[in-house]
Image 1: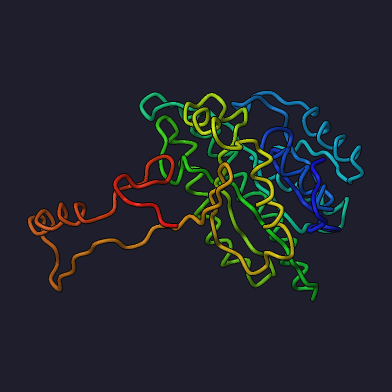
Image 2: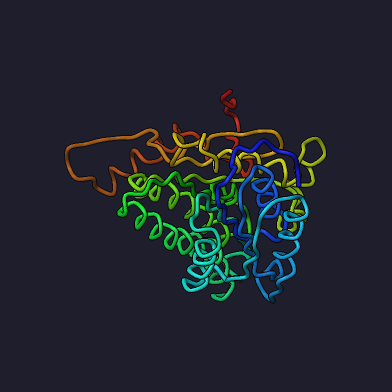
Length: 309
């Protein structure tokens, strides 16, 4: 396991999709920081098909060999029952959950005109429903503890993506799910604050089996550290007691850069007291668009606008 300070000593962490890539790096880093880790992975292919217990168990074996504590779980978090079984195993094994890292994901890239219903549903189920399902069951646990007078110092760390926040060709299913996770994060942070739970998300960019075939990643990897392990310190800190004052935020983490992603805000606007007519809309809307900042590109930059320090 990578060396780390014990910022999560004694904490119980659940990491979904932890058999490979970012999830594996998160699980190992949390264990190195002293957490007891439930390593969840169905062990399927990149498109979500198939299943194997090997990926999750291999990460558990690595954690245990390094002196840490972990158990494997192969529940399918895209179903309510599967997510409930995962959360249940964590509670049954370690008595509590302090950190929930939603990382599991699959890809079935198609353009919207060629995408099938099954390709849409599968991606939405794993990413968006899977995030809801695990948080739902964990939140019920935290609410019950709160009602019993027990104090929670819990963390949810979801995984969004620049694909959903800025747009990426051929990924309407994946991008819609990831944009939904960002919105889910903000709302859940409000709902769970009273139970002693913070909810944040990361939008990571790293060289994994999900991204290694993209030209943009190959280009970035030429002069940046794009290993999954470069993202995990942010996850460990967000999972630690030190992060208790940070909630409802989405962070981009890419090759040595951490950025706070700022959400939708009002840009140029026009107001009138009377009801709008179609003609009046046509007279003002093109000007509003012309004065508005352009949409960010896939890397989160606005062409022609200087980046803020």
